[in-house]
Image (cartoon, rainbow over all chains, first blue to last red; front, top):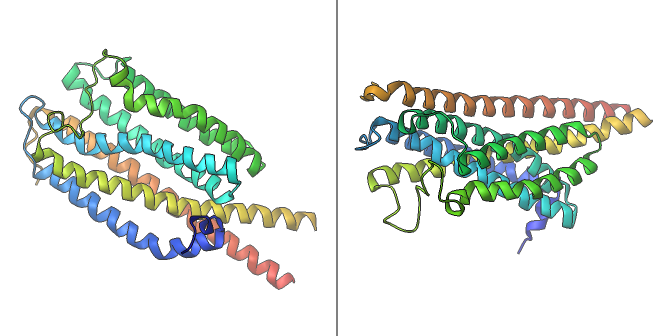
Length: 243
Length: 52
């Protein structure tokens, strides 16, 4: 049986993703198109929230992926710190702009949804504030990678930043439970059926969640391949300059 | 074509518009950079091979 560490070999990673990336992309597009069309056109209005409930199909999946992307970056950073596999550090780097985009979507759709429901675009609520800080961590992480010329040093420092930022990724998820204050509601998806959204909204939401997960995966694989090639390009150019 | 969104049409449509625009921009930039870097690497490897 092959080991997962084989994929730490850049050539093996690119060869494998050559085969799986088209399928993941097809799954992502299919799930996203189906989920968003289902949610936008074929679900009713909510009794209290009216048509704004349709924003849930973008807001909840993007917020979930904003946090999950950081968790994925944390795992990849820990692998870099412990095992020094370049592909894992580059995968973390590749995931950051995707996670940042997801966080931005969650913040914007949340503000647009909040205005008619809460009467304000923004409030310094625990969940909203921790999400804003998570967004700033994404910006800082991307800027730190770009600012340091040596790839290994950049991977070391960004891994440390990722560890620190994980506190806010966790806070973003559980802030509502920690502090019983603020406007944001609890989880929309829960194992507790009483807490869950109604089935009529739940099923298309699940399809959208699957679509966002697949899109994240497709983009991270594509971008990791790019980072692997960009690193090789830098190494070859440096070697050429020294000759 | 568009479902009846009532008084919240602006909020719902702008949410979808902004989100789709961000996702398309992210995908477009990722694809563009992927092609650019691959072409640059292929060209450099070819040049190094020819130079021996």
